[in-house]
Length: 166
Image (tube, rainbow, N blue to C red):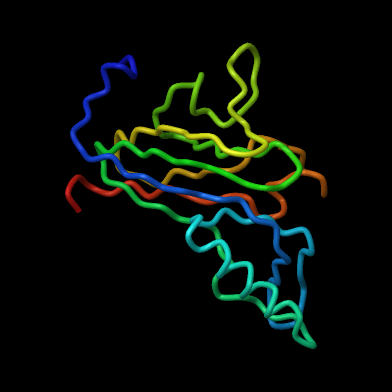
């Protein structure tokens, strides 16, 4: 089915997501990633940063309850409009696996002759929740699995699509 003919039976859900860089502490013993990256709702970014820094500066760095992969929700039939931004000095994105989208505007990747849908600042993606399920997302701006990559530092999350009207 062409995306322009996608049956819009649900509502449109708007999300503002930001990528932030923080130290991520994994356990009570102080094991941590000093270059942690996290998707957060934009409205929560400052609170999460402050919590992460406060917990990290303890004598033995401690995990912050606020630091966890981002999970957003929708119902089958909904349209998700995601405004993604960051202030890091690199290209980042959000690439969702399994939801419908236009690859020219909302893929979150720079692939072949498709338009580059990564960003060094801000971009808006539109995704269509066709059926129920759990759909993972991650950054496709830097997919290296080394320390220079982004996903190994925590830049991933999920969209949970529930039954219509749930």
